[in-house]
Length: 195
Ligand SMILES: O=C(CO)[C@@H](O)[C@H](O)[C@H](O)[C@H](O)COP(=O)(O)O
Ligand SMILES: [Zn+2]
Image 1 (cartoon, rainbow, N blue to C red):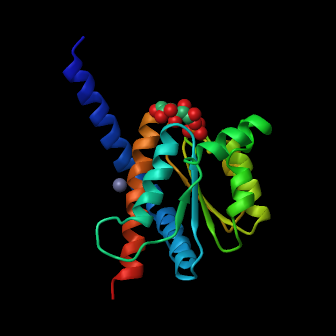
Image 2 (image 1 turned 90 degrees about the vertical axis):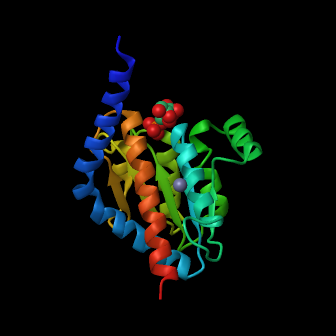
């Protein structure tokens, strides 16, 4: 097996998907960024969640707001719901894994906040439940997903934003999600901190 060729195929597939997704995703990326700008301007916060690789993406995004992205600016309010192992393990242990994010949204989510929910399949029940609870708390939702958007996209309201990567492979979808996250960070900085 030619492993170098295999690596080349991964690069090509990732590049081609990004080019294909650009025209479809630019507009929802801008809408999601504007929603988050409004949220942060009003001193509300962004909650993030996801499973596995998407948990890493959720943390990646929240750290770029709390710390910084590419320019010096004040800290911005974001909390990853994937990091408090005591909350995660007790909620999973006492209730169900499907509740690990929704219980935290119930505790922390306030009207005017935004939930960034990340799922490649759209079918992770803890994400679907987090979206339902966000709605009952008056929290707007930005959903990063793939494939057919799954149950999570079906739960969205008109005031929410879906950013669905047109691909089937979890890895390829995650690669585009990271690019989307960096676009959103850039727009937030551009709008909030450029005169
Ligand atoms: O990162 C990977 C594979 O690339 C996996 O860890 C992946 O994130 C996990 O299988 C997740 O549980 C998938 O969840 P979801 O994206 O379907 O919501
Ligand atoms: Zn980054």
